[in-house]
Amino acid sequence: LFDGSNNKIAGTEQTVSGSTIVFTPSSALVAAQTGTLNFSVRASFRATVVDNQSIDVTITSVTVASSGSGLAAADGGGATTTSSITNQINVVATKFIFVSPPSSVQKTTNFSLTIKAVDNGPFNNLDLDETGQFDLSAVPTSGAGTLTAGAQSLSPHLVAGTFTWTQLQISGA
Image (cartoon, rainbow, N blue to C red; front, side, top):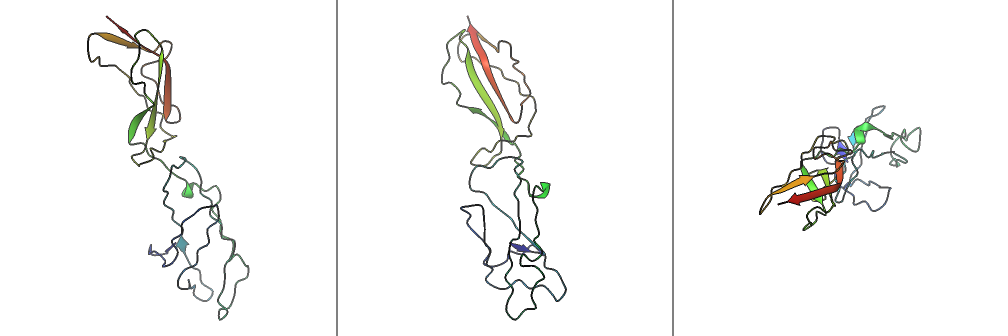
């Protein structure tokens, strides 16, 4: 949790293993009499994420100190951000990767190749919004050869950040 001035609130960092998180600050969060308390919830992910996934945040309960004046509702007003674009994961592609490319291919035999637009993180998260065009060509290491894609294009547009060729062939001299 971070306060209204973007300062981390001590004692609120949590490791999540399920879908519910309980924040217990090491010191009380105090709102002025008849006032409000602004804070933000931030998350860092240590595994693969899904682009455009919404992270929903709902306050379900608030504990008031016995010396305080209390709240009108047990959930402190029940703030929620369900289906909010504000809390949406946004993967931004910074590179292209080939998924399981063949180590070798036979001339005039179809082979498949998939390309994905991913971020630069360790998990290669897929950018589902990437629809750019990609040009595939072959540079022969020895001799002459031509790359063809059958009924598919060698310059396709990505769909949801990916494209799979299924009719690639190398013809050679």
